[in-house]
Length: 154
Image (cartoon, rainbow, N blue to C red):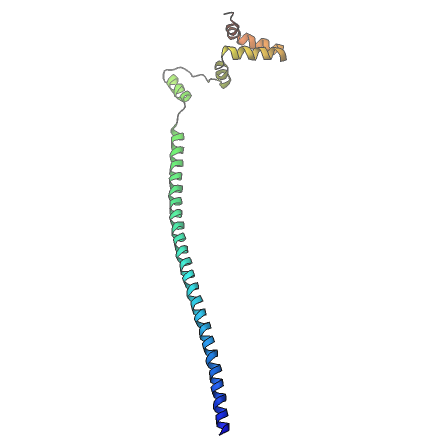
């Protein structure tokens, strides 16, 4: 009988060892299951965030498309306005031509010199006298009355 008892004891010991091993594996499986659930929740949160970002991107793309369309429309409108825009000089030329007068072109240099004050002309002449006497003499001849007014002689 001792062999049966020995066998029974060895089976009990084997069973108890396997039982402890099974419990350890069950705990490991439970820990892994919890980790999988945690990772699944994390993935779901990231997918929700990605969907939110994709929605915002789609909204911004639509806004950008609208802004580009508006900008193109405004550029076309600007071009149309510029094409129909008529300068004061062109209008004056048309008016002069309509009454039979041939219009004259105004030189921008003449306009610029007319816009200067008497003091500015006198200062320019004084600076010119020191550098180039001949040019200063010609300048004086053209602007004599302004130079005299600036000096108080007229």
